[in-house]
Length: 488
Image (cartoon, rainbow, N blue to C red; front, side, top):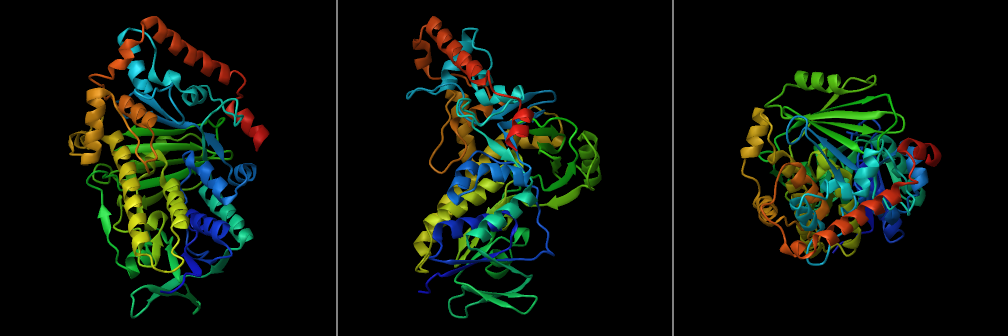
């Protein structure tokens, strides 16, 4: 078998430079990392919202948080505000971190439901420090506050920051446009990339970060694509940036409309805005008008369209090629998972690196875990659309559709017994599923009766203690804007 000594990353952007940074940080000098990128080819550059796993990955590749926040204009994120999703006027918050306190036998929602049955306890989100900090516009990284957080970031600046980080660690960049992919005549594996300049870049393993074009994994290797648009029919987005008109809040806004939703992502220096919609239910002109009518501040350019088909490659790792980012598939950015899916794939690839070139069993295991995680994210996103009381045709179709069996089982479990779960390789926690199911109007018929064994006075005292603990933690937490001024 061919020994894997040189890894060639095709394409830059966030996905390419994340891959290069991780490989050179963890596996140098065992391997050489070369990245091919053309300044003439733009990137989508709208992946501006993240989830807390980014902090773990940054530790993995040695990123300094202070330098990262300054370089990318980043702000801090405590969760997502979902507005008008259940119906017009309805709002709920998907917060990071834990809600309440669970027991080994029964999770917190069971005790909260028992308190609600008895007429006290307030809202489920009252027991989330992240939700309450977000509602008050507060934030701090101080461990005493104990807040789980992620970031909003400038995607273009982030890719540039990662490039500098990777090159300093030993990754080598080659400027050029890929015009052809050479394959080994005997094995069928990829052998080299040909550039417009005439240069030929040989490699032992290749990482496809060429975006929706998927030049290696699809054009060269014809891996195949699983189309999920029958479950997630939104197929177009428009993105635009505006100047800031107020202090940045520490959360993303996801605002539903008649055929999809809009996002609002505040950075230090500007605001990212966009609209996701189904072209069957809304024209691009209507979407543009809806987007521009809903923004605050002056647009910095004309809205840019992005067209996509939700789904994933049949195999993310095929032969001696791994697809990352948009080349591997696309799940719309509703729960900010795009960057996470790149990071977890890169981490697993480092853990399963095919030094000897014999990648059959490694690739099979990698692909099985990748598919399970993508399907988990797919189900979580479908959940937001499927459970709704909106009246528009798009939303009525989403409410009536047959969802994947894996999601149907989750919905039934929560409806019958208020039960939720998180398996290995699943990024969304029990708290996340509970927040979204309750927020989308799914009311449990029953819950674990262990909660009824706790005397009402003790339950009331326990919930009061949780409330007091959160208030105490947030007492000295500054506003998000003040914290940013000091931090960045």
